[in-house]
Length: 134
Image (cartoon, rainbow, N blue to C red; front, top):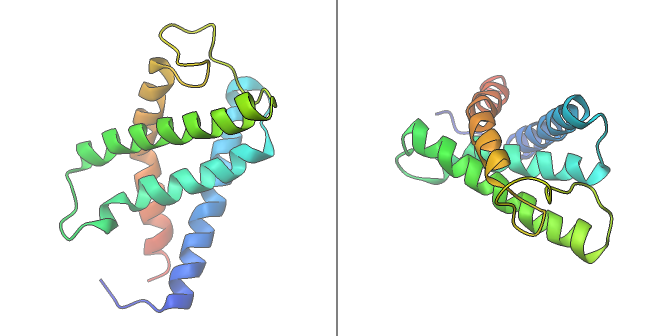
């Protein structure tokens, strides 16, 4: 890997964040017909983390493990944001109360599996964006 300067790393991270925000919002609009601005921020954070997870280790974990950890991270991030936006502030951004095995209406197994499946393309998108900076 080439030595990349700090400014370039920040620009890369910003582009990854923007891509994550737009993609997450687009998925919500396709699935639910609308989104909320907070989902842009959540999507950006998720793509930065899920896509860049392997970079945090000296030896990158196997891809299958990165995908499972990605789904887990997104689910936990969704839970934390749900507690803040939906429970604390009552914004009703989403509600999984009608889905089986949900936790406080904020997360459920169905979406854990969806986020896990979407982690694979998220990893590929993050790598593609960063590769274009080299």
